[in-house]
Image (tube, rainbow, N blue to C red; front, side):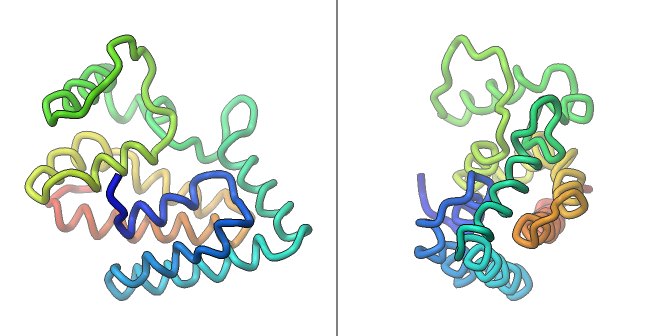
Length: 183
């Protein structure tokens, strides 16, 4: 996987780790983002550092992560396709796998479920050539990315996740504009 600013930001969608704080990945991402997103990435770095600095702060951050992404039943900010299937269409799994194979990605033959996490979907987006991104964004991201981002903003209690939602809202708007898509 290539390291891009978005790949570094995506680390915020995994379970928080105190070790990640020391790497300042969000600040590193800011070095290669436009001004508004860079400002948001620096804020994410500060909030992640604060959220993992003490045992109490870490527990609060981990609790919100669990509530947002892992809660039994339906997590508040479930990360990808099954939650958004009604917006993406009934054939989304077949379309997604077909697209990946057409672009040369290896896929397992017995996949029956959509990716549950947004990270691999965004990583594929980052790997695509500039001219391939508009089609992918339109098919697999534009129909839900803003709704998901805003849901994360609204439902998050911890400042890091609330601002992560704001980051993705801004990112999605910029990408939609670049790709000529209507988010």
